[in-house]
Length: 328
Image (cartoon, rainbow, N blue to C red):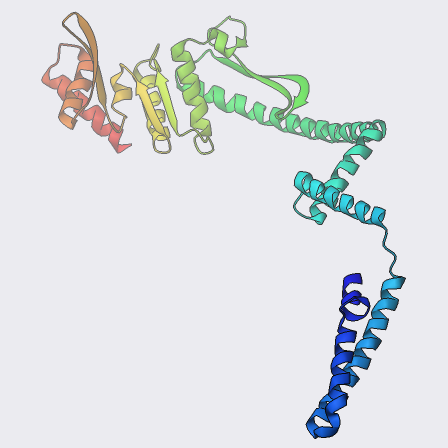
């Protein structure tokens, strides 16, 4: 602004002097030409306006207070803002948001004892609510367990497990996401034996039949799509084997059931029949599996009935077993 004022009014060469000189020269010859007289008047008017503007600029300049230290402080402040933006956000709003976040965190640290006490109180309140809910779930489980025991024992009896004893055992534990119960299935499969955890006393066949009875009950609500039964025919024959086959077929209408068996009554109830054989070649043993046609299936069922002593009666019997099973 000082430089502008000098060029307008106080400089060695300034606009006011130059316009004044031009105005004087035009004024000297204005009497000879009317147009020049008008030019002279306009320039003289401009000169007076320029003088007024110059004085206003001078007065304004003199009233301005310039503090170099304040300027330096402003520049430092701007640098600080740039540094904050680089570290904490691209805008002033982001910086203030981050400031509020760390302020809240600082308040938590400074008031941690009160915060911990409040959280403990809330935790105790929630634990009390959850414990009440867990007890409600436990009560419902025990009620269902009584019905399950009766229905499951009935199913097991139908699978020729006449002496089976089954109970659902409950032990209270500190509650977790599953409640406050440690639930175990207890069973005795032979007369006179103590009831124990089922996995400790059940043979492979007994466990398979237990699972068959269990899955028969839960077939409509169980989310497991595929069931595999091995040695399910251990210790059964005749009518019991037929019942097992029928139950497997019933479950097979809703689930994928795979069963390994040596009993014709069970094999005949399958929708698809595979034969597994072991063969040796070049001092190696190979296991082969083959899906049987209807005629091959009749032959295989006949072999399961009579071994190698297959007669026409055996073939007829095998055909009849398959037809009866498929009718069901």
